[in-house]
Image (cartoon, rainbow, N blue to C red):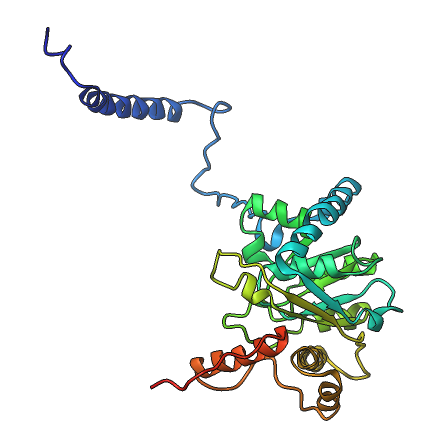
Length: 327
């Protein structure tokens, strides 16, 4: 038997590898020698080449998600997939429908934000006629950074890209056009999920759109989703949640978007107080302007976590844990 016959498959592949690389290099040189139109034309040195703008992120077009076939598909997904999934994972307790019984579309539903579960939970909790004619303001840099994710977000959530660092004209005009056409909106004014379970300051996007489009803002408080899928985790733990709708808010005369956003945040904080305590005490504190802040105590991280645990026990109705001070 010759030496070549005794060569192992690995040795054979090692010899073929360099030959393959040489072949690929020759093929590339051959392609470079091709002339137009078999290859792209060259750009003269005196001409500045045109840079193609990205069609993702804030520039992603979502008009197709409002077409009839997309709306039918989204309605089927909502009723047959999303709502049953939310019922199993989140076991939602929905309250406050009496406060929006007389509300007519369009409206803006503004909620606190703890988890990716929030959007699906809120969309599946909306009553008719809002549920099937609503769009979601989603972070452009997260939900629209890749083509597949952008398509899925626009189809399932009816999402449009929103710049969370600032209110851009493109995002604002797109949202305002849809609201003027009779579409309601779901938005999370904090601009992102809570990093530690406590709330963040509300930004002015929802308030601005309410003032611009002359539509009410419905404050919504969501409790429990941070335990199901917290920020920074990929593990889903089924649990109980509560969605509480507040009374629709309208901007008062001379109230700008910053002040209106602050009032909206106070109303969501009052709803959180209702969930953690009793309704009567919570309403008295809200009337006196003494509702506990959504942002929690101004203290160290361990103290904030301690206070958050107490609030969670009151919210879920479970017995508080017996705690000892650390040694």
